[in-house]
Amino acid sequence: MHDTVLRFWFDDIEPKQWWVKDADFDQTIRARFGDLLEQAAAGELSDWRDTPRGRLAEVIVLDQFSRNIHRDTRLSFARDPIALVLAQEAIRADAHEALTPIERNFLYMPFMHSESRAIHARAEALFRDNGLEDNYRFELKHRDIIERFGRYPHRNAILGRTSTPEEIAFLAQPGSSF
Image 1 (cartoon, rainbow, N blue to C red):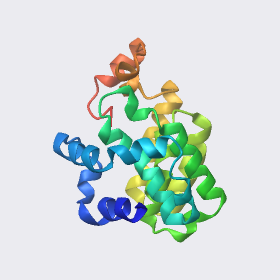
Image 2 (cartoon, rainbow, N blue to C red):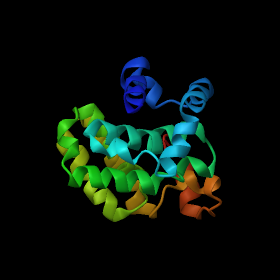
Image 3 (cartoon, rainbow, N blue to C red):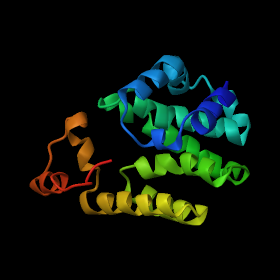
Image 4 (cartoon, one colour):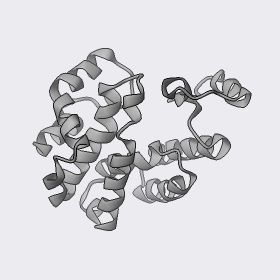
């Protein structure tokens, strides 16, 4: 089944779909992979971790599909800690070395999504060393927001957090959220 996830993500859709908010695309992922997300969140896909591509597929389900399936709700971020730990374990096992740069980019994405300064220190090196310049620039932008605020202000409303005056001013700027 992990091959189905990877085929969908890397072959069946256009790369621009990874980054745009599209209700129809979100519904497609929800219909095709919603049950799989719940299985991953329950730890039921652990056998996927036997291969580097299986590990990657599990991370994509927990990190990327979760955002599509639960768009604009707090659940879109609920599986981030699981995805991060799985990505960290994959790197410790050198599983990322068997992946292409674009595949590694998605293995590393939970680092970028973290609201931890320590995690972003590692993310910066991972994205820099991966060689995909656009993704590295995005990591630096994410890191700078975490350095400045200690969190992503654009998540505040969804997560029920009160924004500071500085965050409100930041959010009013063009391109401030992702």
